[in-house]
Image (tube, rainbow, N blue to C red; front, side, top):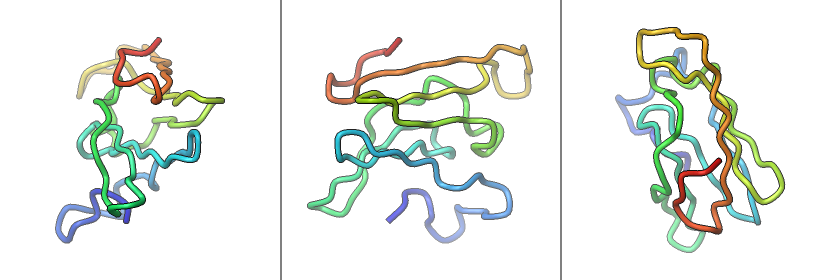
Length: 105
């Protein structure tokens, strides 16, 4: 059921545990491999992309990334630098998924 676990693409020793949250009875996932937020469709048993993650998760295999529910909002906290560069910036990003694919705050 969890996205990104196809044979040959998932390395359990390297990736963080699944980053999932529930907001308004809807399941969301932060996919570390593709840097995307995905939403689970209960009827079709499938995942669809909601938006890109505002921080890089693929450079650290999801480690150091916080993905939480806060009221009706999704909250993402992580490094703001580019792959291979540690500029010491921490990014805090939140948005209400019911309001669509907006840039957030």
